[in-house]
Image 1 (cartoon, rainbow, N blue to C red):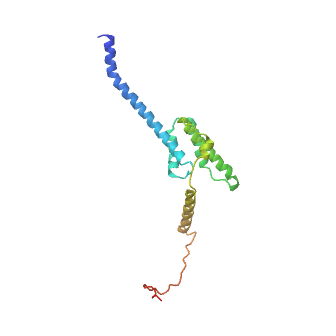
Image 2 (image 1 turned 90 degrees about the vertical axis):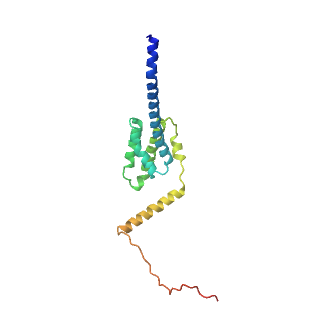
Image 3 (image 1 turned 60 degrees about the vertical axis):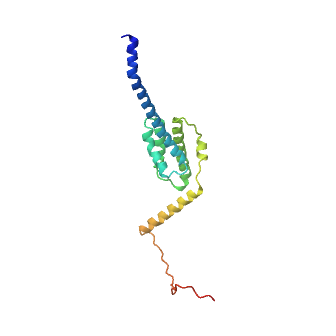
Length: 176
């Protein structure tokens, strides 16, 4: 057999193996990118409602999905450490929440840059939308939960007002 024939046999055998290997590698790479992009999309979608389950879930996946991306892990760590800090006195809260916002936007832009997106931090902060009704509803729900919790713990009492009952007549009065 000539060298050309041997090369043909090797190509026939290894060609499909290499093609499948390359396809699997590309599929894995695309799946990793899809999951990372979904985290970015979730964080972008919920950047104005950070108490949502979707937002918290996306944050908690950052360590897993961006393992080995040190700039992202550093930005994530700084943000999470700030989230876990206790609230300072009222006079210091403006700076505190400003720092929290800056760390979140840094995380968001670091992830976006890694995924080849370019966002301006000011635009990310300025161009998000949440209806005022959502904030109002959340405030009412939190207030109701607090009141119910106090009631169930015996810290608050439910007032019951008794009114005199008039004689019940199932029929309407006669017309005049």
